[in-house]
Image (tube, rainbow, N blue to C red):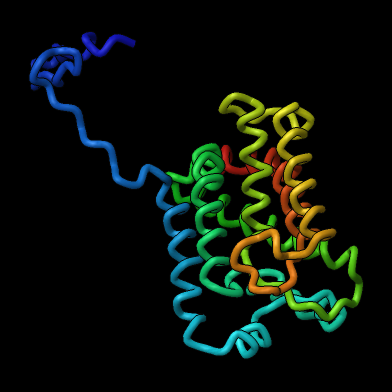
Length: 235
């Protein structure tokens, strides 16, 4: 709609500036254009590691990390707590960057500018993270390896964002070329990490990478995004 239509209000109120006229001023673009809930999530990832780095990693992992063996012990809360613990600064910053990039379009689609939509976004993020760890556990039942980090949840945001890209800003098909293409690339990258070792990723410092959880997170995000979009519309 042409902005000129808004120049002369019917009630005789003040005119809105026409951006096409010389000398008119536009409202400045915000420095951070991401939804507030995404900025908060990014701050939690970075701030959480800043707090965590004050303690030995082994003691933090012992308190918050997840391992498949814990499922048999009934410690299901570790599916969530492990998402907020990271191995080092590079690990935390990479996940924060991916959360900011892929979380922004997902949060907008989930109407996260409203309280209900923001809650749905957080729930979607946690569900993706939990399902990514469960996917790892399904392949390594009873395993003792400790998993930390938001990579699985962030991979879920990537899978959801792929559906939006495939639908040109709307919820696209899970079988669109964009989703399948991004999924194939993400699978290839993580399979290479599994075959060649974690040295392919910067900042791992020789630690293992739960690449299976990354793939499971992407699939979880792509599949679960549709129901969460419908939930956000009712929130």
